[in-house]
Image (cartoon, rainbow, N blue to C red):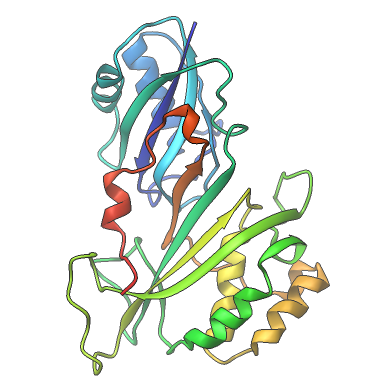
Length: 279
């Protein structure tokens, strides 16, 4: 048997999330259907991190076991021939049986891209979150500091979460204003009444809806509805009812897992350059 790792990018808007469901309609269902067609036998995959409905993946990593021997190029081109346009395998690599897409990851990274504008997005609809009130960067950064480290994140946990523990280690939150649409665009003039934001999250693992629930709280602070210290109170309450509503999945991107370099897996794919970058 050969163990093969794949890097997969996808737009999540048309899917019910990553994890396979009896009714179908998930990213995993589409990927496994394509792999099964390419291999001419049923294929099952294990992913690095499950994403919710509407959430996008830039470098999702999966592994599969197969008796077939194919070149990395063949895995990529062959599988993509059976995939819809909004899902694509970016790279493939044969790994040892010791590699596990989920258990070998030493961390995971997400980014949330947000449009601050009095008018809702059109071209970016489904690809960015949206808020129409101005945001205070310093207040959001101060609030985010209360969440860094190992904590019980029950206040930010979905009732459907399957994690055995609410205790997670959130290593970093970065909040920056961004170039408007691409990393190559010029800075916006000071009088333009809209701007883009990028929120980056890095941690060992995340609870179901954890980032979207944190986003709801950070934006409550950013708009002046709450003070930065309120986020600390929410965290310590360990009660989902006291936190802000779950924010939209539209602007959330799973950037991918982090592995030890010894595995030799790619960490860069084109989609990472496509996302807005801090000014």
